[in-house]
Amino acid sequence: NYARRAQIIESVGSIENNALLAEFLTESARLPGGGFSDDTTVAVCSTEIVVSEHENLKILLVENHAVFADMVIQEFLGRHQVILVATIYEAKRALRETLFDVLLIDYDLDDGKGVEVVLEATRLVTRLTIIAISAHSAGNEALREAGAFAVCRKSQFHRITEVIDSTFTKPPTIELGTLPPVY
Image (spheres, rainbow, N blue to C red):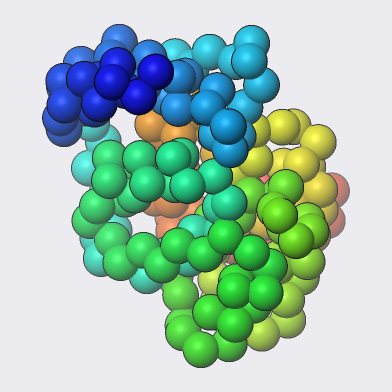
């Protein structure tokens, strides 16, 4: 229902109406390539937008669901420089060519699993905040095991600013026996 999505996008504006934002996220997620199953619903609990203490970060977003990625960039990452890629190949190339502050990585990509990108990122870059953004717990766990420092499930993406900020207040290293934060 693209007409309804357009109405929701117009109404949401700068995330002033969380019920409409939740409806938009839920409908977008259910579209082909949206990243969620048909029974997924999204709740946006906060009535205020958290403004990041860290602005103008260079973020590599590795996400193959274009509708979700476009919404995330527009609504949540607008204060940052975001490079969007959809494949492992593109992500590896971007990591070799550009120094990023943050890597937001999905698990299920068209050409493989995001774990491959996380392993490459930890090999190439010594200081990079890696955040797993899969809709599925098993995918996020695999990304954490590969080196992601934090998790922000797709259904919780309204909290991405909080997750990014939390990774900069804690050193992005994992001690043996501890688990990174999950949001």
